[in-house]
Length: 384
Image 1: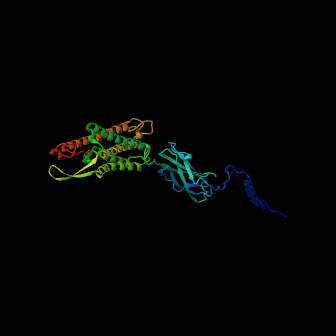
Image 2: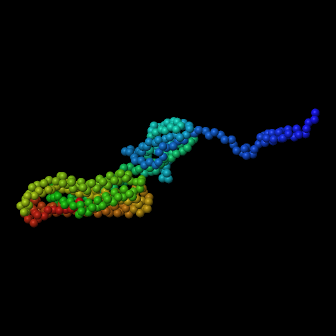
Image 3: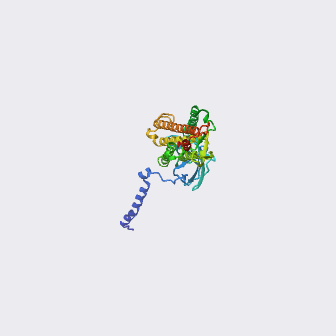
């Protein structure tokens, strides 16, 4: 049989492409060898705070900060998260300052949410800390939440000078009485009666000083104070300013409430009511007013210190407490308080002397003859 030459050529045309394709498939590719085979990503927990914004906390009566945290698991694997407290550059916080309530965190399923109660205590205030949320095992993502820990309502740095101001006010009142006894003898005993003072706020330096200090302190507390105050919280400052300003108004009412009135006939034969108050109560009212004025000055010093401490001008020094070093602020405050004490003490002493002279001129004590001119002149002492 005769076979045409065309048949082998056609067969070759079919066999050669197949052989080449087989050879190419069997030969290793350098690029494919260098690239690892893709694997399916393993499931893992992804813990996040539902509210990751910064929180500003105020301490309770036991100086503890309580916070509720909402934690969600956005991952595909159930796990137990871990919480830790970390500090900023001031290094005032640590893991030991954070306590969980209860002690353990719950297992959070995928796409689940849980509420965790935490308590922060033992931190030197004020402070800025961070709560770190992460997965224990297997490892997952890490989230941070900033918490700002406010100062206590009132600290010893505020109470210490206020107690000193109260003691100084009582010393001024007692010293005034002792000086009056040295000058007038037994005439100014505990039952000595003093006439009503002319309590005019616009003429009283101590009252004006208190009011001006209160206005300045309120304005500074509203706008100029830093977010985290050092010696007291903003609410504590506002309360102290209000209470001491109120004392200037309460002192005259104390004098008025406990006064005793007697009906008399004056030199013009007119019936009048003569109001008088015991000397100890008068001195107490003066001490309350002096205490209010000095307290406002102290609060003003502390507010200036809160604002100007970074500039090392108002109160400077290595000690953290403002009263442990002599500086511009503390010297100015002490001198102003001494000046207020001198003013109030001298005013009360002059008022007592004026009342003694009035009694002697009108025959109120000692049987002296009544002087008509002196009888028309009532003691007036706008001291408070």
